[in-house]
Amino acid sequence: MSGESGGWTKGAEAIVYQSCNTCGARQYFCRSFCAACGSPDLTEKRASGAGTVYATSLVCRAATPETRAHVPYNIVLVDTEEGFRMMAHGDSDLAIGDRVAVRFTQFAGRLVPYFARAK
Image (cartoon, rainbow, N blue to C red; front, side, top):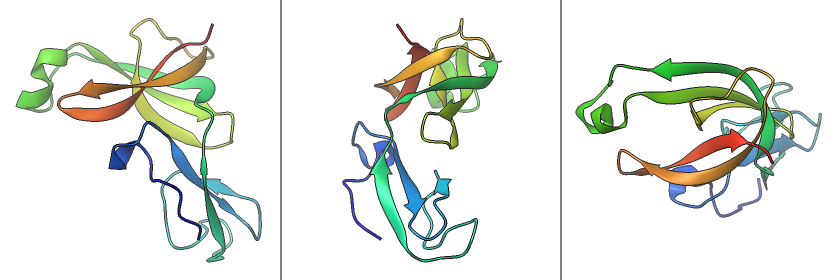
């Protein structure tokens, strides 16, 4: 497995995924093996940040005291151009099927991917 600079979970403004060198499958949650074929031959890549909204959910009740100041906020599932689905924050007016692009912002003291309608 090659080592890119980590993604937003490590403070970088990037969405990192893995691509299997054996079967070509892509996976967002990093593992030591391919979830499709079991191969350990994976490469980390950076996603473009472009995708399509698969689902959206407006959160109106804070899950933690840290998120209370952000209510209401939108959580979206995005099908990325690279072929994996991920959960992230997004504009509250997003709808299923909208084309989106990512930026990164602070939410409850953490850097998170945030999707808005693509221009």
